[in-house]
Amino acid sequence: MKVVDINCELYKLIDLVIMQDRQAQKVLYTRYAPKLLSTCRQYIVDVQLAEDVMVTSFMKIFVHLSKYENRGNFEAWIRRIAINECISFIRANKKVRYVEECDITSEHSSADGAVHTEDIQQMIDKLPYGCKMVFNLFAVEGYKHMEIASLLNITEGTSKSQMAYARKLLQQMLKNDHKINHG
Image 1 (cartoon, one colour):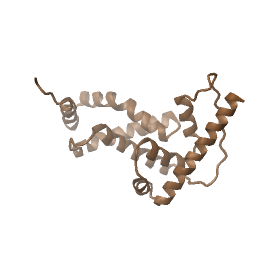
Image 2 (cartoon, rainbow, N blue to C red):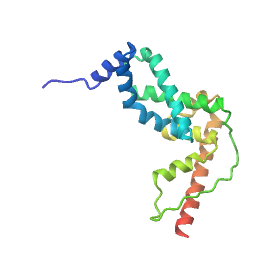
Image 3 (tube, one colour):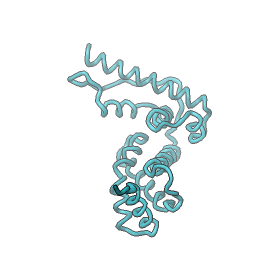
Image 4 (tube, rainbow, N blue to C red):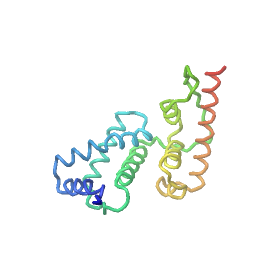
């Protein structure tokens, strides 16, 4: 039985992209654009702005691809670049605030009473930017509070409090959604 390295094709593609092969760049972009757009969309509400950040991320990926050492998960490496670009974009637009209280209500009603993925994303989108970034980094991306603190230039305590606050707000929105659907 012959053993085939599944990543062999990816490594060849990466080598071609490093050599600035336009077709290889297109293949890499086409393969990973939907996933990176989804990542950017978790942090940036406006789809067009998220697309802009995704394209900027790809530019950085193409420029720095030679630094990828074929160790670890390639998709995780490019996701990290996209996340850093999202954080930079949000900072540049000065939309980051860490808040103590916020009045957020839910506008979601579902005929079957279930909470759908789109509803969850809309609820996450309503979180203040600081809470949203910490929530996404911790709950979605799996970062530890120490890593989040370093990435966002905040204290570990602020990261933990923002995560707790995000949970509280999401629970409130889910309760409100349940009341709307079930009286």
